[in-house]
Length: 403
Image 1 (cartoon, one colour):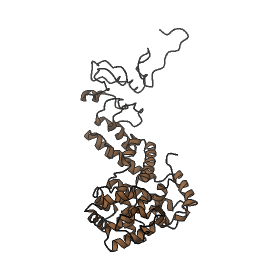
Image 2 (tube, helix red, strand yellow; image 1 turned 135 degrees about the vertical axis):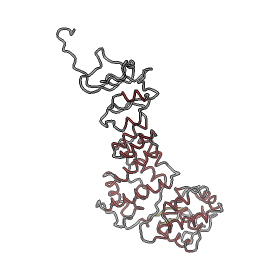
Image 3 (cartoon, rainbow, N blue to C red; image 1 turned 180 degrees about the horizontal axis):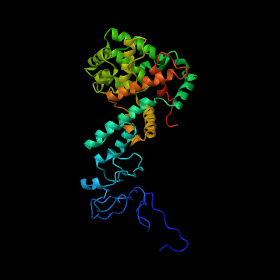
């Protein structure tokens, strides 16, 4: 009986407490309540009975979900509108008709369930249904692809546009007409043992610091390409890329000792002319020991400018500093789209180095689209698109996506 002065408890309309329940009954008059992660539900004598509440989620009951998944018969009799189990798995076929309005899962939710629900929410129902029906886990690449698609939709946020516009009105104003004036300091005497040496560079006997601009490197690379002096083109781009780093000459010396370096660069030039920058990237990736993407993309960038003339370059520089900015932005995008494991996915896709040709292609598309976005924002961005100006801005630390 109900003690005097105490009102009767209303029917329950929410899930029971996480560990243990109150003294009153767990049934509800309307709808279905969600399971408590701890405890168990006794075996039901009649499998045909319609459940009005979800099973508990621990111990050795047939509906136990901490560790293993439900049997096929139990899955058919389980409520069709419950959120996934906190630990364990759900039958893939049940996900096709699951309500997306369910409560969020607690820790330990299967990646497959979360990723498929994410794909459904984002409108990729066909892919999610296929993944659920075949019972396969959604891979890191699937998550990276979903993140890339959203990244190319959102491009640059307002904070980035404001920061870049401020930079263009101050320190970056000298690059509005083009990034050719962007110069790097180097000490010619440190490169005394390196050859062939570009004629447009300062004499290697000079001990004082010298400057070499992007436009001067383009001219030196163009001269080398005309003479098919492929190693000289590499030297020009590599010296510009290393600048005053003391270890630069030693590393370049080892790269030039590779007997196939000239052949590799020649093939990359052919790929740039007949195919595209991604094909050239694929040609050079891992082909010369010691020459990683952070530096051979510099060579591809200058080769593209030398071969393509005044058009925006088809190849862009991708190094660690630029990749980290894109990674930070991708992380924020992933969080905003409720991507499972956004930090890990962004870190895997936009790592510090070793990027795949696919990743380089994503980078080129995103940079070109973002540069086109900047043309229409009124921030004094040059009409010539200039994705390499955006690369310079990101390299210079103009915008921090974490702010």
